[in-house]
Image 1 (tube, helix red, strand yellow):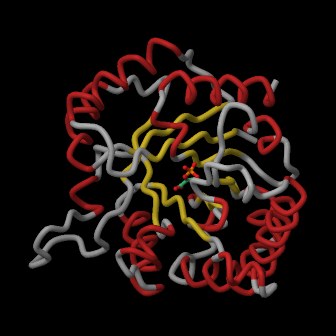
Image 2 (image 1 turned 45 degrees about the vertical axis):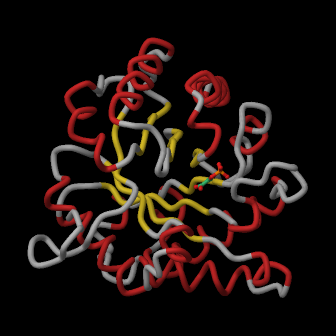
Length: 256
Ligand code: PEP
């Protein structure tokens, strides 16, 4: 199966800086059939970058969008408006859930809106530190997974990507809170079992499941070889083109 390396730039880089970064990254990486490289710039940079992007080397993602197609939603941008600019959209990132109160209803409507507009949803799920400590990870992951996918038909399920991101492991600088490959393997297996029970064996086996949480060039290889994991969602390390390119190279080596 293909591997996916997604860089989430969050609210970083001006439009000019985004363009310089894209130029640099495109010079550094080759086009790989076995690795799909995706970058998620800030919304304001998507239109110019969509004209600059070399689609043989990488694809663009939005970081969030509004599930309504058009209407009186001041300040929002819809999947319909993003159609043609991006191939992917991150949905339900923990920062959207925690800081902007994205509800389960918003998230499942966003997944459906992405699919309706030919944009591949990257559905993020993951437990908080407290939920982790109290042994609630499986329950939380199952609820977020099935909640986010509840409007997705068996026919469309193959068009979805899942990203497991334990919130306690995101953007840790000390390394004290890194998720271990064994923990991630357990959750990947659980996600696949849940998908199989709901959508059948093919979905359970073939839907890409990515890992995200303080991935960097030194630990990317270990995470990419976790059974059941098909790629990485990278925050902090994706902001440095050299580091992101190194992670992409590692993914290519692991695929070979
Ligand atoms: C994220 O926020 O999706 C993420 C994985 O960030 P980081 O790589 O910085 O932990």
